Length: 295
Image 1: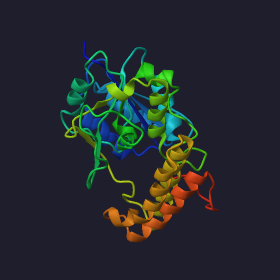
Image 2: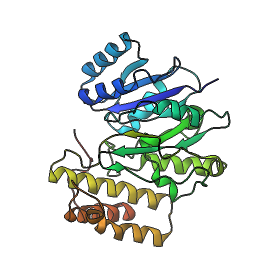
Image 3: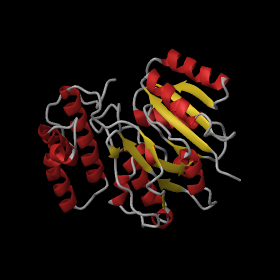
Image 4: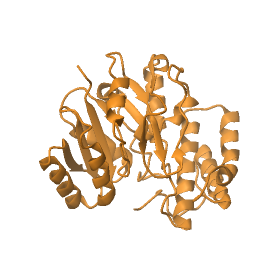
């Protein structure tokens, strides 16, 4: 029997992006697949959009939660219909090219599948480069799997307690990213066999989205980069990465603006460096706005 998908989307209520996401999934879903939209803003309009697509035959429902991407994803998983399924967590601006879900379904079809990862692209190309299929999962290469590229059995997700709601975009702490990395690291710690069974989906299979800094003002972009730097640095500290790795990671933040194309600028290396240092030290330096984004 082919596996069923559960797609959980946390959103602040960006309706145009959500409509494009749902339209891209039309025709790709199997009868037992299900989409949950978790509205953390513009709730009535999100519910109306879900009802519109559901009336047209798309298996989608809407619910609500308090702020925070991790809280929203956990709420969405709990709102899925009962039963085992493969979870994945698209952003509200994610798009699924034609045939993507069919390829993903093939990748997770083996009954032994428990967890894997696939590629996410933005307007500039692949966000990360995944290892070749068959590569052993470790604490370094798992960073190439970002949240919208996670594939995980619901039973495993529930067993490890889902996402840590104290981290990730919108959380009420300074640690505004790396919630997916934290989830995978906890999976590795509690289910060590996954290091050999982790499924790296072929790099040609991907979803589309937008870059971290897309559409933001200079102030918003730098605030977001610093917040993301804090989150990644904090994850490395909490999960006790080697000290040399943490030091190299913090220092490399200064090169962020050089190594990344527009809209990132050379001067953006400074907020990334400061954020990573804050995360590794577990201490912030006077920034008043801690959340990564408000829109």
